[in-house]
Image (cartoon, rainbow, N blue to C red):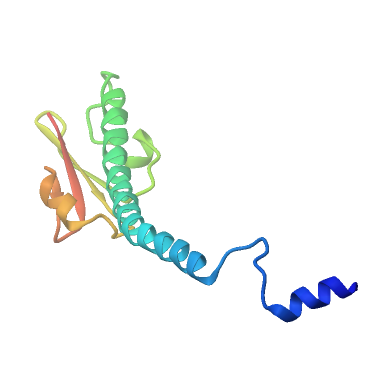
Length: 134
């Protein structure tokens, strides 16, 4: 080391490249604030996706039933495996000549209550979605 470097160090700290503690704390607090806003919204949107999965399963079964009854020899209710492959438990009931009920259970139990209250077909007590086919 040269004598000039030792003298400049002895006089005090000189600012070199880098961030101060205050700058780092401000950036971390801004990131924390953004995370506090974004994470609950993300969780709510993800949970609504579980609701959409149940509704899509009911629609898939309805389309499968429409195709199944397109054959004139099919006059009785089929089993679920005959009409669609779905991710959630499904029950098909009713009279095929009157009305058919497709009941899909949300096996994840993560569909938000406020979404279920706002949409037709949801039963919050059983956590199921019912689609009617006439």
